[in-house]
Length: 79
Image: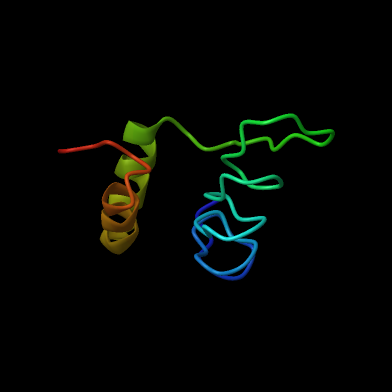
């Protein structure tokens, strides 16, 4: 979800949705949210479409998260 604390979807630390290290939502290796290889326990995402996510983050004045997602190349969004 939109929680920015530990374990939350917008958390950048270990286990968070925006964490790029092992087990994080933005990690591309095994166990990560962006891993595309085989897995016995696949990651399941409930993130909304990017344009909706951006709208909701901006509604909550979370522009720093919007900037982070765009700067990291996770969302290709230029509005």
